[in-house]
Image (cartoon, rainbow, N blue to C red; front, side, top):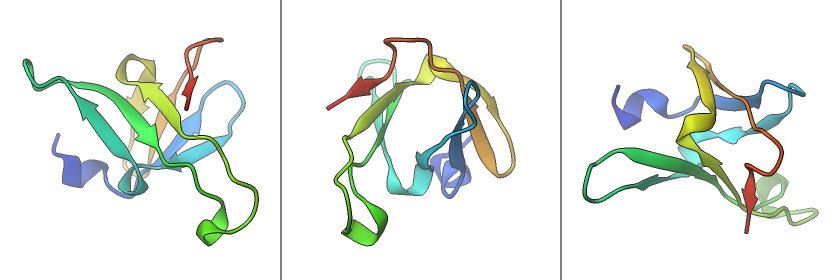
Length: 84
């Protein structure tokens, strides 16, 4: 799968159905030695840059359960989500 195919997909948490963000607005952390994706970083911004400031979230690639045509389903175990 190419990065361009991930763009625009919503990231949804399996446990609570919460919308975590959109891949097109995110960054990927890639291991330079292997070229494998380690995690997705969802930026810390409110709606259109206004409102309550959210924390940046890092979602480990191993938390991804399914990549569909419109969304990515993740399963976050307690303590797995890294907030910066």
